[in-house]
Length: 82
Image 1 (tube, rainbow, N blue to C red):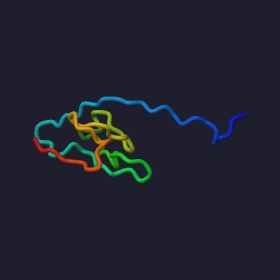
Image 2: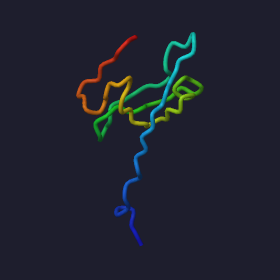
Image 3: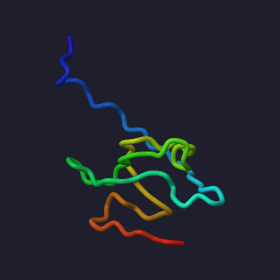
Image 4: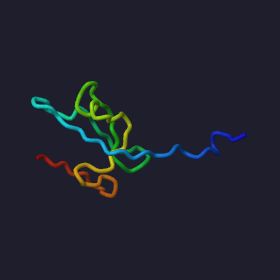
């Protein structure tokens, strides 16, 4: 028998998502927060039916990279407007 403490952590699945806003949408429909215990940027909430929801983003997902800008190795997260 294996106790809960001895089980290996679940495998981490990395997936690349493409999130597109349709004409007239003003946001991507998600909010972020920094990690409470681990460094990183995490999805705090996803607006139902919004671009991120349609693209497959889920609450608590960890964001690794946005438009080839890594969010994991940086102490400072920059926001880029296009």
